[in-house]
Image 1 (cartoon, helix red, strand yellow):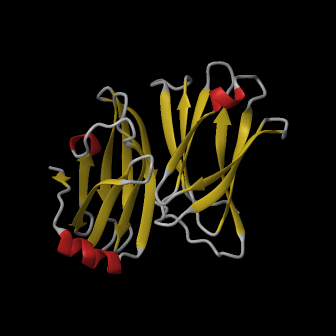
Image 2: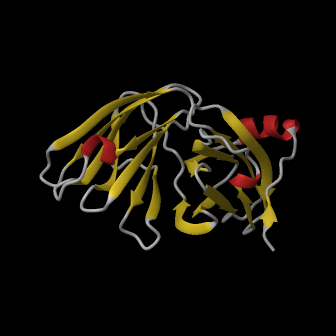
Length: 236
């Protein structure tokens, strides 16, 4: 039987903040009939303590809990059962832990599973002197549509630049983002690009100082009509 995550109290929260060494982040959405189930697994040999925190689109903390998992133990929680409905209840979830975790994220629409993602890579720390890039795929071909969510997983203001290139290598969209602590921004590429047989290719994000986390929603081509991927690790 799976174990439901429960808050353990403020004293534990304070202690974990100093001991946490691993920092994970991913996208959630509990608006418009959507929900998210988070499955946490401990692959290590020792007990791992963790704190999970949910922020709304403006970066305001709306829920948090602390718990622990023994070696090879797994636990889960359904966000819709823990946070009140609000039109801004979407954005970034962070997980701070004392050791490595594997996080399975199930995205639901009207109670039905539509997408599953696995988060194993923590948010990287960047050298302040260098520029880093993360990238992913987008498509606006035929009935395909792509939504892009740019999230700040840090308690400080973070900036990045997002650029979309079409299949012929031309830049078709670019935008600079300045995100407040834990703030998220959503871009509907259909609204800014429309559709075309050439509108697919590389979605590139340049980062300097602090890393952002990217989530991509793919509509219209899968069996469920929605696929969600989290992109954390930079490629260069």
